[in-house]
Image (cartoon, rainbow, N blue to C red; front, side, top):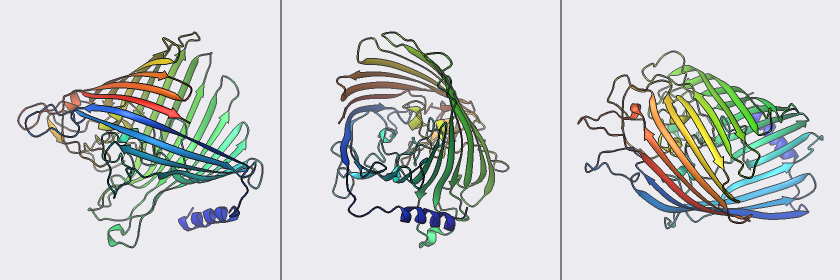
Length: 473
């Protein structure tokens, strides 16, 4: 479908459903939440060398941050509603007159039209949350390992951002037991007036998700096709963000069931095709795979103990191979957390845990006393394709969503490392909860290369400790 036709259809839909300026309001609900964090993070650059000027903001960093949201839901009629939510994210005492540190930014702003034109159809138009399944493909417009322009941008707490909304149109067709979702989202609008953007197109998301409720064993089967339309014809090597960038099609199938009480099994497999276009205009065929498998069991007693085991696979590309098919999985708009530390610090190591990765996860939880939950997660990370061809080679792709963490000296091993995360949650009241999480990332052999002086540069254990209090109103 051409972009002009898509735009015309979108305008027709929006134009045909414009609400009166003075719509009567049946009901208004005000809600929100405030979360305050105390954060300590150390050795996030994994750099064990001291006294050589290598210390950075990623060493021994302690600070406070808060996220506040206010939401208004208005029911105009039984079938027409409007939602607005404002959001503020900030690090304490980091504010100035030119920033958004203390501003309330638009987080949600959408209209809901039920039974539009005919009974099964619901339209949701405007800035809204979109998440399908576990968030493997669609869940966060800038991916869970990054954050857009907020007061947390450029800090070591970007992964805590609550900003997840898309500017989108969503049509939901309820043909029980089938549910069909059609989406159109604008990810990036490119200003074509400047010569530096010549040949760079807008970035859009199109997709369809079909779910079937089987009716037995609480089982649901879903199939989907999502398209990342981000093609460019530019050959300007100074342009950034084009490695790789192209029209990516993701076709997938997911399902879940509870064959016996307490046992939950889920799985998802996806295949990507299309074209990957790297900086400079080099075009290659995109051919990539992703797989998620998970099984968990919860015992039915007063302590509700639970255990689980999961596996994730994201195909990778050997950096030394610059021709032929491009096999690295494109994270698209993922919203998954594969370890509270690794999900952040490995984001720049060839997309870390979101691409070129094989991950084993084991987890468990228990409620030792009323209102208290203890949890533990273990992760093992391996590369699918080694990033360097010789031991002690430097790798310069180690960056987060805007701040360089530093050069990594790697070995040709595929062992990225291991992580242990521990958590405690205390529900003080129905509206107030306290949390404490602690995590440790232990670098694997792949990250323990030696620098030019023969010294191991990236073998320190990274630590994260976060205390939080949240109130919901």
